[in-house]
Image (cartoon, rainbow, N blue to C red; front, side, top):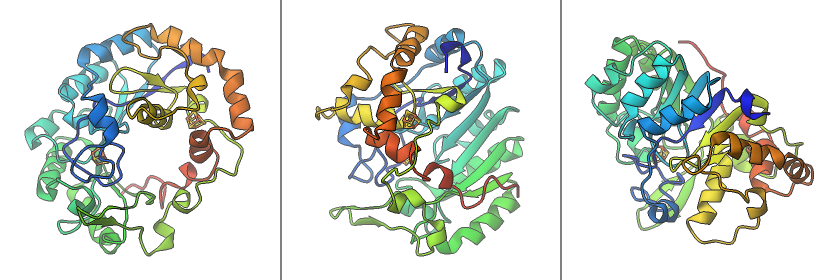
Length: 325
Ligand code: SF4
Ligand code: SF4
C-alpha cells in the first residue's frame, strides 16, 4: 500500500461513551466505569476541524467507518457536524453505536443518503442492558425509529450471549417490523466474569454456532493476511495517532497509558500523531518498515497480528453475512 492509495479509514471520534459494557477496552474490569488506559489517557475527541484536515490530506477517501476501541461516535461533541461534512464530500459513512446517545430529533438529522448506522442492540427490553450497561432500551428504539422514519439506512447488530440468545428471533422480527434494512448476528467472543464486586458475569451462548472461533482459539495458526493493507485502509485514534488498524491502536495505547513494558516498540519508533506531522510522512514511515513487518508476520512474533489476522476469527464474525430483512 502507498500513501496515495488510501481510500478507507476507520476512525475513533472519541473515547467518551454513555455505556459501560464489560470487557470493552474503555470499561476494562469495572463495568460502568473506565479502564486504567482511559483513566490515564484522559478524554480525547477528533473535532470537525481535525476531520477536515484529514480529508484535505487524503483526497481519495471514499469510505469512513466510525467506531474505534474506546468510545461511541455518537457521543463525540461534533458528531452530527462531522457526518454532514463527510456527506458533503461524498464520503460514505458507516457508524457503529449503542444507539442510546442523543435524542430522536438528532438522529433524524443523521439520516442522509450515503450514511449507514449499525445500532448495536444486544437483546430486548429485559436483556439489552445486561451487557450494554447504562443504556435505556426504549430510548434506543425511539432513536432508531426516528432515524429510519427520516429515511436512514439502519442495521440491527446483535451480539448473542448466554443471557440473550433466546430473544434473537424476537429481535429479528422487531427489526423487520421497525424498518431496519438488516439484522446481523455478530458472533460472541467477549466474555467477563472479572468483576465480582459488580456481580457481572457475561457468558458465551450455549449454542456453539453463535460463538466466534476466536473466542476459543486465539493462537493464530495461519499465515497472516494483513486486513488493512489489503484494503488501503488506516486507523485514527481519538487523540490523532495513526495506526494501521484498531488492534494495533489497542495494543500500543494499553502499553503507553499503563506504563507497561512494550517489547514491540521497535514496530512503531516514529511520531505517529497527525496533529504533529503530515499524514503522508507518517504513512511513509510505516511503509519504510514494511520489510520488518513482513518478517514479524512470517515469524509469528507479534501476538496482535497473529490473533487478529492469523486465524479465522475475523472471517468468522457473523452467523450470516449481511442479510436484508
Ligand atoms: S458502547 Fe461500545 S465503546 Fe461504549 S462501553 Fe460499550 S462496547 Fe465500549
Ligand atoms: S493486526 Fe497486524 S496483520 Fe492484522 S490488520 Fe493490523 S497490522 Fe495488519
